[in-house]
Length: 221
Image 1 (spheres, rainbow, N blue to C red):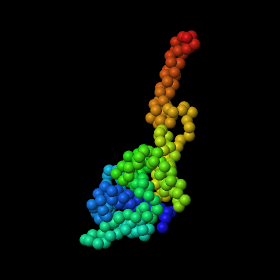
Image 2: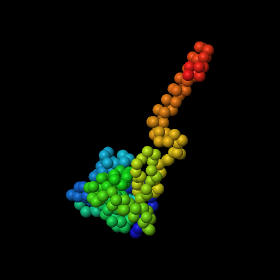
Image 3: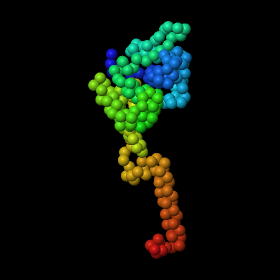
Image 4: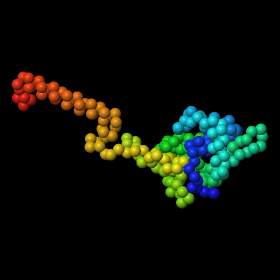
């Protein structure tokens, strides 16, 4: 089986991300029990966005993932335990799985951020190697798994997002303003607008003052 898959929900991608992450970071407890999986999905750090899933929510998502053979259930022992099958299903190497995991857990990131956040899953030699794998994932004949997002106003680098949940919402870009870089910064643009208002008010007050004195600004010059 290969990609494309039907779009996965946020919880389904979070489950896959947690399973891959914990396989590397806490191998002694992998495969994960339901309790450990729920705790990993609801973890408040290194998760974007933060979610609050119940046992029932996770079990429902697991059933959906199992129907696509993305996870496997190991029923031996006192409790059921779950492991991922993402590399085999998507037919991608471990480096790609690491990148997808970071994107599923932390949301859109730059190549440099991905390299840092994949450290515990796979150590990339440099940012260029991350970019090379991202390019391969974006151009797969079987279907793209990541996409490079348009650069947001003020951003220095483009961010990447995974496509396992469908096409992500693209950041909106404003039209090029006539006043250049200042207007692209909302805070700076607001300050400029307020200063322009103050200058206009001062000019009106000065004009009224000259009118009372029976003079004009040209006379003062």
